[in-house]
Amino acid sequence: MKKFKLIIGFLFFSIIACKEENGKNSKIEDMKTNNQIEELLNKQLKAGYTAEKSETDYKNYTFQETDLNISNEIIKDYLTRNGYIPAENNVFAEKIKNVFNITLDHNSDKTNVILNFSNPCNRDLNFNKNEGDELNDYCIYISKNQNFISELFSIPEILDYQKIYPESAKLEVSLANESNGIKIYKWSEKKDLTNLRELNLKKILYRNKFLFNASDEAVNWLIENDVNFLKKLLLTYGFDKNDKINQKILSQTFDELVNLTPNQTDKIGELFFKKDCDAKLQIRKNLLNYVEKTTSKGDNRFLYSLIDYVNIVFDGDLNNVYNNDPSKEFNEEEKALILSTIGEMDIRLTSKYKSLNPDVWNNEGSLFYNIINSNPKILKIIEANNFFGIPNLKEKIGAITNEIEATSDR
Image (cartoon, rainbow, N blue to C red; front, side):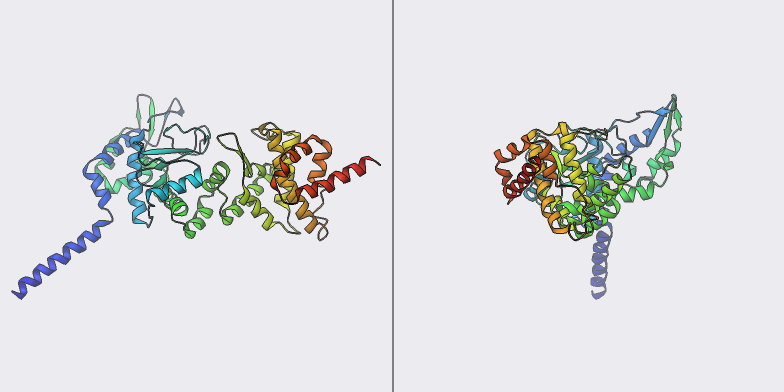
């Protein structure tokens, strides 16, 4: 009897251990049974990762929502196994609203919501892969039923299909490299696919941990490995709530612009002042706070670049380096607000540091002095808006207008 009990106990614990071992792959195995992944995988393998016809790129495959949904199932399994904790619907919706200014309705029939970083005012659901092609929009997708964000991937980009689906791998081997004048480039021949796959999955994991799990580890990883996403997040949606990210984006952007011909560091202003989908001016206040905190007697790079930007807002893009001329993008009241925001900071920080290092703080006259002197009507707009509620601005501008009047009387 004791022997029988021992055998039963051994079998029980063996079953439990087996379940625990297989638990990691349970969701993938579940998806394998319904053949959805394998069927779609075979279609994608037949199309290859790219195609050519007459030595030019040829669109050999059209992505649909099915591709995104199955891609998301694979991603969901990876996220779960690597520590991502999905937020409750109301918490997730609140975070999406705070970051992307989009209202989610978890009761609607929509499975996916698009975040079009290239054209954020376009909410039409289309299916684009982010392949570095500037002709195509850069798109992120909100999986509304699973509470994470993702990209659209082909299955081979996120799953070791040769290991999990050996029959599909055999099918790919049997496929011709050219058919009807169309040259197919097979996924199995794609250079460095294993590392690309790992990077794709980690990007999605750490983006979600950063946005929805408040992970400091994720912030550090993204800064080192996915800064392009962080820059788009700041430029397009105004995410300026993390000083580590602010430092990285500002420094990197400045370094890129300072080496252009002509010097274009003034374009850093595009990170700070942006129109939203309602054509309303948005000012990245946390980013401005970061500039103020990091400006010193020996470093005024960002402030002086913003001063140059404000001058272009009033004088125009004389070097034709902007996609949209800032002088035409903002109305007179918005220009007055931009001037007031940067002009007040200029006066305050210049009075603090110029005497300590005049070689670095070498601008002739304040931003306010130069703009009001050449555009006196802007003063009336600032006054009509009660100095935009900026503390002590009335007194500071009063001192400048007195200086202008004294100069003109000479």
